[in-house]
Amino acid sequence: IKFAIQNTQGEKISKEDISTLFLTLKKSSYLKKYILQKTIQDFEVDDNGMYCVTFEPKDTETLDYGEYVFDIEVTLQNGYRKTRIYKLELTEEATFHGGDVT
Image (cartoon, rainbow, N blue to C red; front, side, top):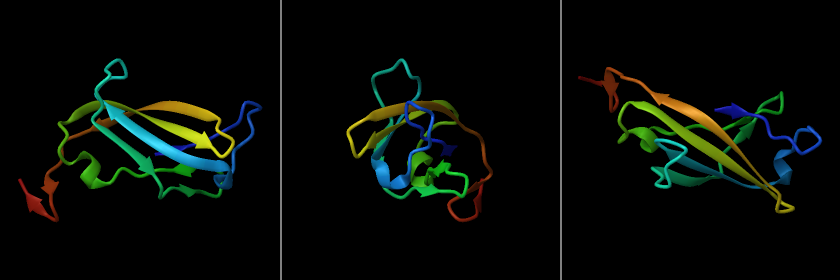
């Protein structure tokens, strides 16, 4: 997932200004119950200033196919918080666990 983080003036925020990135995954944004929550420590910033977060196979391997929503809450060193909501679609696949075809 790639996304930009900007301050209230629309300026990109540097990686050094970020205290934490926190991800929550749900079946619907209207539900209180979450499926996954985790602090993201391994994130990259590309040459265009876009932040890159990767879902690992272990994050989604037990989930049913379908649409999900997730948000990423960014907390800056100064305590300011910003949240963005995204959609994730898990689709069928034929290859599982290192090549076992089903």
